[in-house]
Image (cartoon, rainbow, N blue to C red; front, side):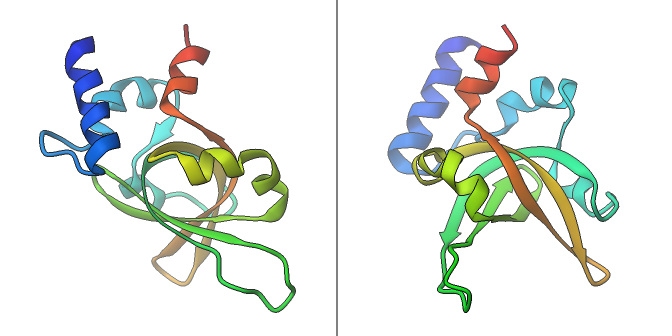
Length: 138
């Protein structure tokens, strides 16, 4: 995808929160995979406690009250293949809250947790924007 088309896709996504031409992650996938980022469909094959990197469009952010009074962010994100869930605890929120709340697309590194036979989620440890990702690989 040429630079102009990529800029158009990102602008379309930012303005409308929808991309009609392709999924927002599609043009970045090859670069992400070369650097160890996996798709949502691969998460189910990873072992509990695995350190993983993935990314996608932020679908929902939820911060329900907790009994302890500590703030926990629960997120659902989407890549080309499906949805996946993240949990962000206070120690990580302190560093990445602005990115989490202000970015439509995020890359994340974290630890995979399994619950039951098919339930998987990621405890987030680090976040990047797409721009930061590309700046880091120059």
